[in-house]
Length: 383
Image 1 (cartoon, rainbow, N blue to C red):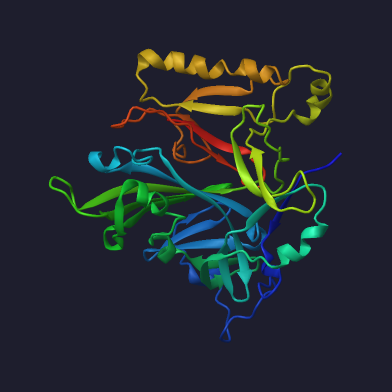
Image 2: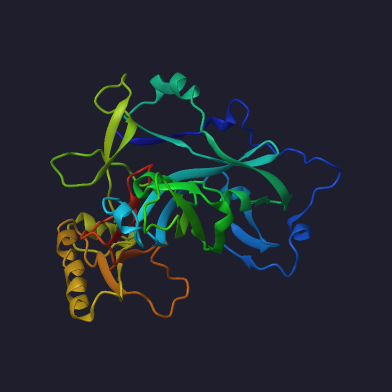
């Protein structure tokens, strides 16, 4: 049996991107406890976040270096002007703008964010060693280490956060929305929240308009933008090559399947990660219905008119019948937006949401965020 392998080649360990600890300039290493004042609030997560003197600091543990992180940028609120956004793909609350996989690494005496390259291979990697050796993961950002503890590093991300970086801003949607230059002086941070598996950034972004500003148009637009950094599973789900006879969404990876000596685009299927609980594996293999380890939970927007909400929920739950055909019961769970959970946020890619939005364009969309290494669907929305 041939196994599909995901090969992530960020060759920073070769050619200079060493992971060995480097000495700090000067005689004294500043510790995080010395650098961060005791009265500075700490938001604990897979990266701890501190806001001190208007600056945003991330504490990067050594255990999180080289871990893969998915960045998803969404529009929370916006001032899309009707004539300019009539044919735009983006422009309304809940719109998915951009996503990218990143990784934090230590390069000598700095912390860098790189964009790892992902490949799909068949049953052998031997022919491609020379090919991969010529690749380098591009650095998106590089940070001075401000302080450190025994097993973590403190970096200041303020300048990157408030820039027009596609990790935080609308850079990926500027052409569609006919936006002009980024107005950093009118842009500012709102909030950063850290959780065990994700960090959510909120900010206000101001952009001018591209081209001629017509009569009745405001010269600039203002947007509330959310960026969710999601810690990807340490072990990716097994890939599945796309088969056009089966109705999956798909994405492409560089790689090979049909030939062992040809690099080409390969279409991979996107799927939910439904797995039986360890104690139910034998039942599952006998064909009995079992509940998955992680059901697909959908949250229904309270903005949906009451007269329709019941039927929306029933329609979502009806998909359980399809999942029963592959051995899972209660694969889909439907809930209202939780009113008593201060951490719930429909723009957080931890939550699958059926959302009701206002738009000048009659349309519905089903954006999803996937693990680019495997095709696992991490989150999906219906808008």
